[in-house]
Structures are given as C-alpha cells and as structure tokens.
Length: 378
Ligand SMILES: N[C@@H](CCC(=O)N[C@@H](CS)C(=O)NCC(=O)O)C(=O)O
Image (tube, rainbow, N blue to C red; front, top):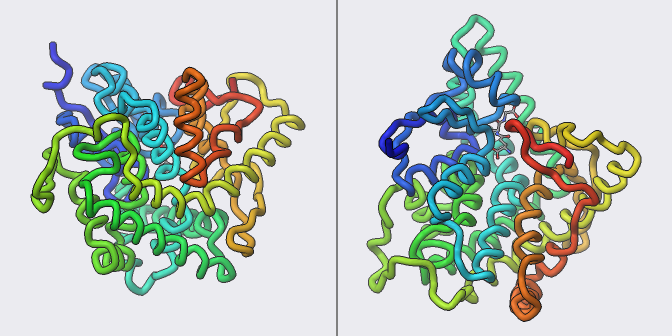
C-alpha cells in the first residue's frame, strides 16, 4: 500500500518552533496528517513511551512507529522518497544543511527574545497556546505557568539579557533586511522550491517571529517578503504569484545567489563565535566526563552543560552550550568531508565569502548519533 495515502499523526502545536519545521515539510510534500497537541491523552499513553522525551514534534506513522524530533521526521520521508528536499549540487547541499542548523539552533536568541520580552503584546496569545499543550486536568493552569516560566528562563540562558538585548535586536533586524532583499529575487532560499534549509529556517521564523503578535507585526512591516515566505512555507503549492518569471526547481548549476551569501554574512556574526566557544566547552566537558557510548547527548530544550562566553561586535554574550547544534553541523561537515579536493575548494570559497569558514572545522571530539529516538554519544 502506498504509505502516502494513509494519515499520519503529528503531535505538535502552532506556537512550537520545532513543529513548524516538520509541519511545513509534510505540507509541501503532500503527506496527509492530523495534528494533535500534547494535551491529548494519547500523547502520554501511546507516544511518550516510544518518543522517550516529551518534546514536539513527534510523528506517529500509520503503522504505529513513533518518530520524535523534527529532523528525524524529515529524514524518515527523505530517506524513503529519493531526497526531494536535498539539493544535488554540493554547494547548494552544504548551504541548505547550514541553514537547517542556523534555523534549528542559531536563531534561538531572537526567537526567545521577541516571544518573552514583549509580554504586553504577546502574553495572552502565547498563553492560549501553552494551555492547549497541557492535558485537561485540575493542574492544567499551574502546569501551563510552570512550562511558560521554564521557556521564559530559556530566553535568558540562551543569551538575552538587559545588556545584550540591543545587540540581539540589531542583529535580527539586519538579518531580516538581508533575507527580505533575497526574497526580492526568489520565493525560497535556493530558488523556486524549498530545500532542507528552508524547513529548518522556518522553525524560528514561523512559530515565534512570524506569528507571535509583536514580532509578526515587525516582520510584516519591516520585511513583507519574509512574512510572505512564512505563509508560503505553510502551503502545499508554490505560492509565488508575485514572481512574474517563476521557475519550478532549485537554481541550476549549483548556483548560490549573492543575496543569500549576504544573509549568511549577517548570521555568521554570532553563529560562528558561539559555535567555536560551545565546541571548546563541550570538548572539555567530554574530556572530563567521558560519557558512555549510548548515553543521552541532547536532553530537553534549554538543558545544556554550562554557559560559554563569546563576543560579537565587541560585546559579550553568555549562552548555554548545547550539543544539538553539533549533531546538525555533523551533516554539513560530513557532506564536505566526502567531496573531492576541487569541490572542497569551491565550497571553501563560498564559506569564506559568507564568513562561515570555521563551521567545517569546528567539531566535537565525539560524534552524536540517533538511537531509539534519542541523540546519544557514539
Ligand atoms: N531536537 C528536537 C527538539 C524539540 C523541542 O525541543 N521542542 C520543544 C517545543 S518547540 C519542546 O517540546 N519543548 C518541551 C520541553 O523541552 O519540555 C527537534 O528538533 O524536534
């Protein structure tokens, strides 16, 4: 039987960053699914024992298999259908994978800042959604508030404080401008249809930055083309009526538009120093803790190993070092390692122009692998 004809269950919520990545993939690839919140009894009873951690998104296949983690959900469909969202060209493949990391892990500061630090505009809307993720029990309100407090605290430990707030906003607005300029030329990152990088980037850009009242308005006013992309990524069709000479595929000849390199240059400003500082910290942690192979490397959101300090434009940011970034970066680094020398040179040139050279060499001393729905040390 064609599995695409059957309905999947996606445990997710509209306000959840990581849910937006998987949901968009399902929509764009026309996978029939029903979305359910974690408040449904079936989440605790049927999903959690197999999902292992209570994070969303989690997918239940028609055969009853449970897949926790947005990247793993996408990989399940990619592996089974000839990798439709992975570019064939090596430069595009690496840039796509890099945007996946940046979206999934590199934009947590603005995502958390614009959700939690504008309570007057956001709080009612955000609480409605957090309430919807809790089971309907007498403790529902209390549990909602506890979860919200945990996430509000995460904003701070990801590096948004009174001291860094101005910098976080300046970097976000510059990035928004650059991305808006890119979408003047194309409706997606690499041309006329979405790639893996679009789905990763959508995570923070939809649930938080493109949907919570304060940042959504900001995006609509400052970057209408970016806002349109967040809408477009949630439609099954190409949704590009405003492009008068639209194509249908990724750009030919492994092209990376200059407008996208400009976006990366802005993003590199905190992504690169943070990645370098986190790798050094986690490597030191690995050396002294020597985790058993198979032990959990990535816990729930905002559970890191400690805080690292790095500087951006002469200002200091203290942020939680999280191994998840390196699990995703492994894909970028593995793709690079597999290339012949002359193709490596082409990628080197591109990454140098983007300010991202060291993302290839900044590695952990232990690999992270997936086992039984968890990210574990190899
Ligand atoms: N690596 C996971 C992370 C998922 C995740 O942290 N999801 C958040 C919501 S956006 C969550 O469920 N948080 C609840 C918690 O950490 O308790 C993925 O990519 O799906």
